[in-house]
Length: 314
Image 1: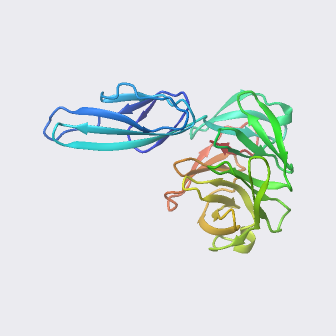
Image 2: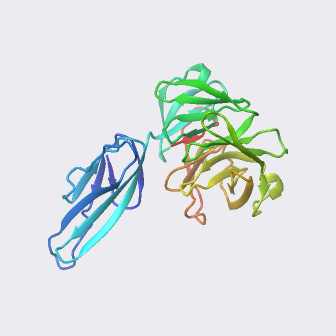
Image 3: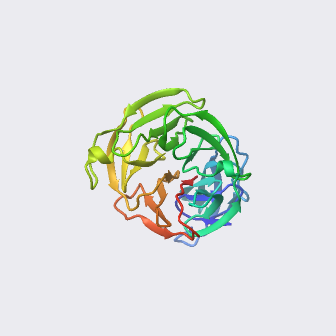
């Protein structure tokens, strides 16, 4: 059970969320009334609040997405209001690809605790670049492969969707379901950003170029060192290039330097609250808040049995 009293939080679908208004006080000591309301929920959700007029309410998210909850507290003369956003997902999923084989795993977020779900179908081993489509399907590509695949975490199964025009090094899906990929033609060569629809039809392509420069290295070289991409909650496309963060226009390919990162991860994920996550090659999870780039990334050691190259997927 999760207790929520302030800014938004992330929970798994089906998790009971405890909404607590007991911190509300009246300076005069008057009795208070409480009115909880579910002001927004994802399409297809039938969730509702339990005990909406009590000091404490409950919510059980039933589909993936954002739930907005408000609370009004009144002493009969004055009314105070607050709200909280709750992001429901299927957990922070990691696909592990060790040198000696692979299996599907789940990370309990920020704890460094690794829990195995089940062994993967051998045909599904190897995906490094993953993202969830708006309909919650998990899509991804494997390194050195020219195919897009769909993965089922619970069953450990996968299926090929369509062929890619070239090898890709990064992958993300926007809120409308458009698929964005960055090519991987080889070291020190320029990379191209592609956009596809869900059927694999190419919408656009553009060679990456520097808009606002930055970083430790030559920006004209670093802009082509894309390791992972993902869309932020504002719809912007971010990339991890070596150990720096860039913002890319997926239509024009123009990239602006954003901040120096703390790790050179192989893929990135950004949740709906602007938290960027990546795993480096030293078994560490890094959390970087895009809303507070002046703050250093939080480093969380992970308990791996062997070295892994693994993305996190919401």
